[in-house]
Each structure stands twice: as C-alpha cells, then as structure tokens.
Length: 150
Image 1 (cartoon, rainbow, N blue to C red):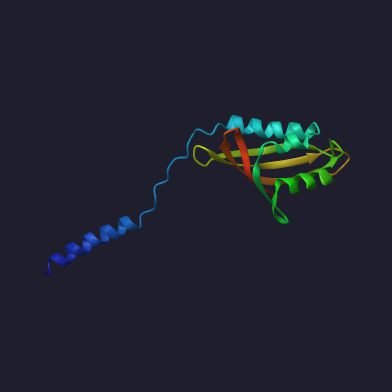
Image 2 (image 1 turned 45 degrees about the vertical axis):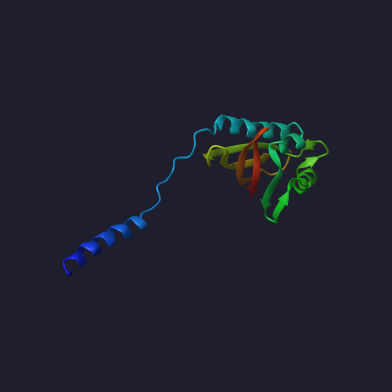
C-alpha cells in the first residue's frame, strides 16, 4: 500500500497541473474586413464635414450608447449636444478627421475599433481625443453599438 502512495500523488499532481493550465487562446475570426470599417469611418467624417450630422450619426445602431465625461447617454442626447457644440446651423464649426485607427476582430460579427479624432480649422484651437467603438454586423451592415470617447 505504501508504494502506491507516490504513484497516486504523481497522478494527483498531473491532474492538478492540468486543471491550472491557462486556457488556449482561440484565434479571432478573420471575417471582419478592416477596409469596410475604415470606409465606414471615412463616410462618417465626410458627412460631418459636409454638414450632415444625421449622416455622421448614421453609422450608429439606433440603440447605441455613448460613454463620455458625464456618463452613459443615447443617440438623441448626443445629437443634441453635437448640434449645439459642434455645428452652427447646418455647418460644422470645425473639420473632423480620424487617425491612428486600429481594428481588432471580436469574433465573426463584432469588432473593436480604436483611434483618435481631430477637430481642426474654423478659427478655433485644434481639439483631439481618443475613442473606442464596439461595432456589430447587423442586417443593414456594420453599426456602432457603443462609443467611448474622451
């Protein structure tokens, strides 16, 4: 019986070792086409610069949420804020550009898109900040589900 104890402890050690082994990472799906997501961002900036706040916000899902300095808000609240702060009637106060865009697939139908926004011109100081967008593939194409900007 005593010679079986080391063998049992050995098997127990192997069992415990396997229980604590790190999970294998599964490669993210490659069905997310970065060109499509970059084009989406380009269309949003173009709409803004042409004075179409509706067009700028059209990349967002109707139930999208925004996280900003004052907490979580919805599209209607963002639209109202943007209209007051960044537009003069139907014209943007400053030109919008996106830079440093990086895209990370989160499976076949979701992606994390990060980058930098830059507001320039309009005889105003340049303003910039960072953003993280969670995008999802919907029946109508890719849409922003959540936006965290600072």
